[in-house]
Image 1 (cartoon, each protein chain N blue to C red):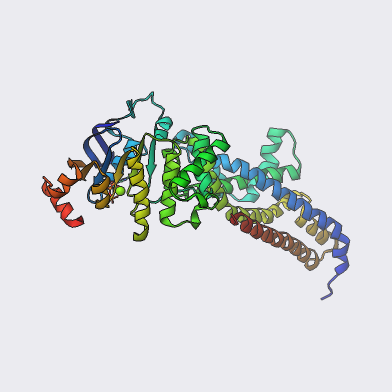
Image 2 (tube, each protein chain N blue to C red; image 1 turned 135 degrees about the horizontal axis):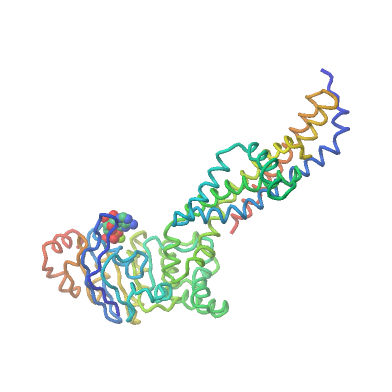
Length: 240
Length: 218
Ligand SMILES: Nc1ncnc2c1ncn2[C@@H]1O[C@H](COP(=O)(O)OP(=O)(O)OP(=O)(O)O)[C@@H](O)[C@H]1O
Ligand SMILES: [Mg+2]
């Protein structure tokens, strides 16, 4: 589904991603962990070209992202992204947040879009919030709306960049619950998170990144119980 | 001191007419300024230097030279050359429009750049095109944030339109000067003119505050 080969990313002099090679299969849930500044967000952002790719190739669903012939916007619609800071549109209601891209990108008519948006809101447990503006929602509710908004595009892959890091502890659960449900439905997911419980329970594979490299990857049980690299051990001893 | 109220009364119809013209010229000026300013803001934010630089200098010129100098330049040189002929009111409106377009452009640009980067990223990540991101996500938010500074700009422009008196555009200050010239009195006409401007700017302030509250409701 996703195939990353020799991905490099530099910001000026700073080499943030050095040589990333990752294969992700359909319906797989891959959790990315690693210390702050290791390049996790940058890696994720390269997967839908919010950051440009300096070198290497990323292939999603058979399309090479750097190929000049590929319509980036079409491709991005296939790759949902959920951000740490939610990034809901504050001037739009919850319902409009979800329908806006459906109408402008997918060309749904308003009525169908609203019907589908209400279904998605029901799915994340927020159908009663359709008419309100994001500012009146709690962090957990905002993030669930953001997930519903991404799902409105019917993406083939969902990327999550620390979706619960900006939340009060009591709201983390409700967001993880929605993500778990998505995973069970067979969504292909790449999740950057510090929630090791989630990684263990839902992840098919954990990737440990450090200083721009994928240092180690394995299924969650093996990686957490039996890390092979010193750096992985050092990191895990801090977070587990 | 003998305050000759009757002079004000005699000139009152003219002063009121002048107020109307002052208001009219400023409203047209700020409206045209908003339209032009919008495109100039986009031009100035272009990533390509060849496109950006003319807009940068357009803004530099209009913000860096006195409005009165611009008015003379347009009234006596530019407009007669371009149009063959001009009237004082035309010159004032053109000058106010161009001058405010430079300030409005900076207001819009500041508004756009104050929007969190995550907004555009989220919109792009959903597959929206540049134009759609601008149209549906960034501009509505930037515009809302621009309302207070736009209101200020309007008030500044309204006061600056008094420079029109220097080329005999029959606005508010012009009629004050006319009264002063006729009777050789100064307190009466200039106080009346000042009160006239005050009425205009205060009414505008109230109107703008009302609009700001209205726009915040949702
Ligand atoms: N736009 C940018 N310009 C310059 N440097 C950047 C930019 N974005 C990220 N970086 C740098 O790239 C490095 C990796 O950043 P990145 O955000 O990918 O790390 P991360 O693993 O997600 O960290 P965190 O856990 O703190 O979110 C950091 O040193 C960061 O300062
Ligand atoms: Mg990050």
